[in-house]
Length: 308
Image 1 (cartoon, rainbow, N blue to C red):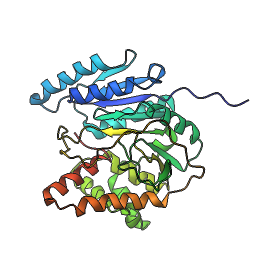
Image 2: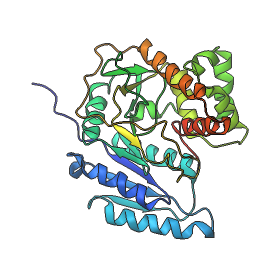
Image 3: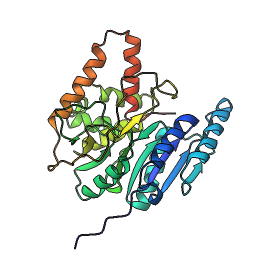
Image 4: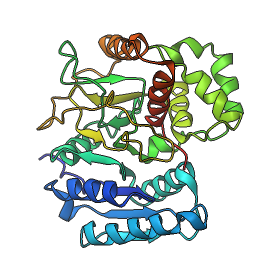
């Protein structure tokens, strides 16, 4: 007799001040067959200042209209910022349920996304090497397998377990020192992006990325993240509407259908690093003004979590 399937993983949804984007995101969740049996908690951050109150209230009204009927909606009085919102909400869900699916208000999910997340969470729940399940990949490279492992944990729609999230290190100085001491800077940056520079920038207060802490923590624990070759999550927030995003079509994807076959071996896929390197190189090689390249790089930073 096989073990019964575990209950569906809970969803934590994070919103702020974008009514239209939040509506799109919630409608896409409701198109997933599992949603009626899935615990859903929606965290709406508070306004940063008086000028932001109206947009926050409009977003909250939109969420009340679009949310699944059984969703629990948490309205923050204060502005925690995305980093602390994510840290708090994910930690609460992991403590209660042991696993979690994370969705932000500027994401649209394919109807099969929740099936993918839940199957992957079940498949790899006892393998400590797997720390993260990603729903996004920036391009469909035909030479990659249907899904694959790579060290980089994309955070545009993702899932994890309590056993992994407990390894999150928030101390940026400690992360910086450990990466240097273990000679991991080159590995951290492999693929063409200066993630170590982003960590240093976060340490210096240039921006507040929770995701760079998560990536560094995964790296230091020799963890891997599962990705689908064809993205099951799209980001609608690169239209210039976000607090820390700019308008760009560079990260537009066509959503996949169904659930990709999972790898038979838990090991990093070398082709994934090559695909990421090709993607980042093409961004820099475009014959466009440097200011636009800089905007694209800012958007890439949002892949590892933005601050509000």
